[in-house]
Image (cartoon, rainbow, N blue to C red; front, side, top):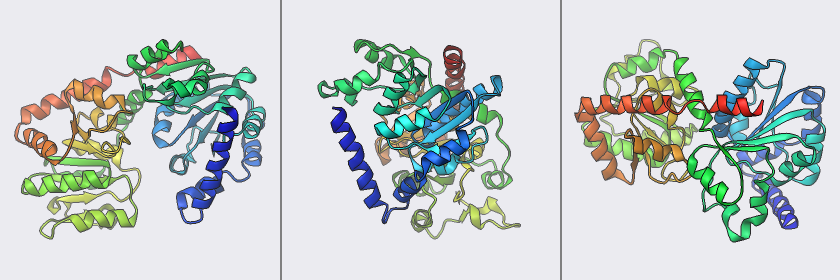
Length: 410
């Protein structure tokens, strides 16, 4: 199986190289890994007590972040290395202030992993959620370096638990410890003779901390003007279509803030093209001094970094990606007490089902579901207040994963 895996990795590298000829993200993936060895040695070669965190992308980084902050606050002399697989994560966090260096993860070949790990004084390594890289795991194990999987979730449908996946399953026996989000993952691993600890998800600690540090945004506050406001967080086209359809069906009885996942000019234009002429919309980047935002029905946040502070002005949230099993962060709006809508394809995100069972998360199959549930909340202030309290308590009751992991690992 090692030979097959090596061939797959090399084939992947060839395909990414071909795609990079026309795809900017693939090009960043290639360019970002160029001369990785010299860059790594220059930045980290002399550092001691390195704590290495590897994240697939931005979502996994948000799970690593509370533990990074805990380590730096308790052991300030520790060095922090953060690696990403995806350009979207790297580009947004390449200047992360608590990291000594942020880089792309070199491709998982035996040669790369030996060079990467041997050149660093790694004390601990942390792989977030789904990040299982065979050659990195084997090299860390060979060099007797403690390493962990944190905030992990496992499902029977994954390759580890299939008859053909024994090679991959054995990789899960190499980490020093695995910390899982919920009991179901622990049971599944236990049935396969793999030990784990239920720690919960570090993101609950992160979003609670973020909400306490939220700052006013006078522009969004003026737009909101104490009217019922729906925040479309990290929205995809599907969510945007449903929201606008419900908006017009309700005779514009609420305001909408779109914070799309894709803020490219073409995607934002797609939202604008679906807005009817009788509605007043404005893009955040077009706002000028003196504009009366209270007169507008729709605000489009076409800038990065505004969403987390926008939730404090919302009444409900509709989070993107849930129709494609790529659900974005539903915990941030819940921290502010917002009832949260999301698509019903969210198998990989246990927090979605937990929030639904708690009573303030609503998974949506289609438009009729959304219209019905939104109308109930729009018409019943007591129901809205109840759901807001449920979600605040939902977040608060699930914090503590960071402290537990830190206690076991550091």
